[in-house]
Length: 452
Image (cartoon, rainbow, N blue to C red; front, side, top):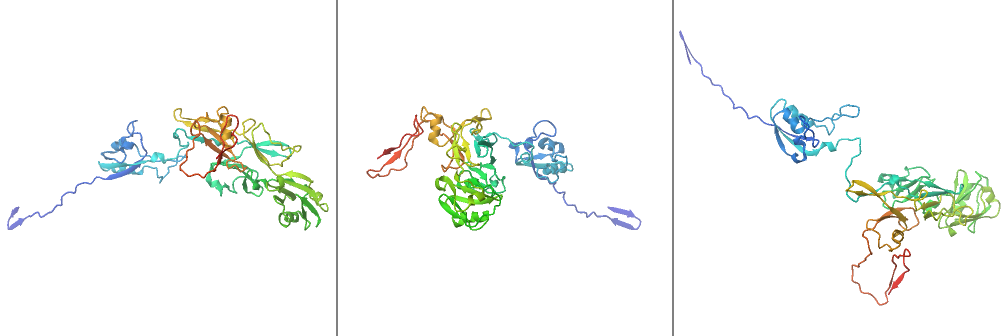
């Protein structure tokens, strides 16, 4: 415009420049929360936290709408009430969205398909329905029927072995040396054969029934502590003369174990006393002990006689092993009897099957038998096993048929006759033959029949 003034003429030109206003951006916030949270404004489920709405984007216009859709942000505390800062399950993303909506009026929010509620700790154990027919070996309520012989009292004592369910406690097929104490018994339940182990005085675990287990218990022990012996005196063991080269028990051990070994017989000094061990490889599984030249037998505190190796036996309660001093085969302390029937703390396996209708584990009966034919005979003597129902269980002792302690579970697949169908069509040679036996109503197996 022009400004009129005496002698002055002013012109004003507006040369200002303006950039257009930028379009406002709306943030996208990806959050993780617990699933199916309660709405922050009612008792209903927060819609944005349902499984159906996971990975879906919501445009939220206020803090109130946010807590209605996703619930209030959750931050965890320990049992003392102290906040767990930095915890992976705290809902930091939802809190960030809440803060943004405090200074703006729009934000896109997307909840990831992750349920933080499943990651939080709980004072109780997690639960869930097992699949119908799931079987549970309840080791806490199972009796294994382990009876250990005490030659001093001439009685059996029931032993409850510990049950190993963690494979980290097993090394090379046996419990680790650090597990348990000397004299303990343990079941390795990580093995489907559930072998029974014993911890020897040398701190090693051995399976009950094998030769290493037998030599874990003395067959006969001397009574004299650290005696001074006479060089050249002799013992006669299983008709083998063992001469002493020295004057100590350790020298006698060396002579028997190395200089003049006797098959299946070894010796050791334990607590300053002489001990003899025998296993199944010894003649008749025994030590026949006699004195030789000199007084070595009396000096050590040994008594001439026949001493049988420790025995592992499996029998029902009606057939008690005869191991007493007056019996034919006297057995030393540590011999083991597996009592296969339930009376008087015999074997009683707690096996259960899950019923999806009742939602309960229901106990099932499982007898202890040596093999399929014995199970058939005991479960169905009238039908020779023909009437044994499908899913019937039994426990096979001595799973590998090698005279060692173990328990393996077997289940009947179908009821009825067993049918075996070959998979090949071979050519036979005239006079080829094979033998066959079968379950029978009157015995476990029929006599072998030769088919030619």
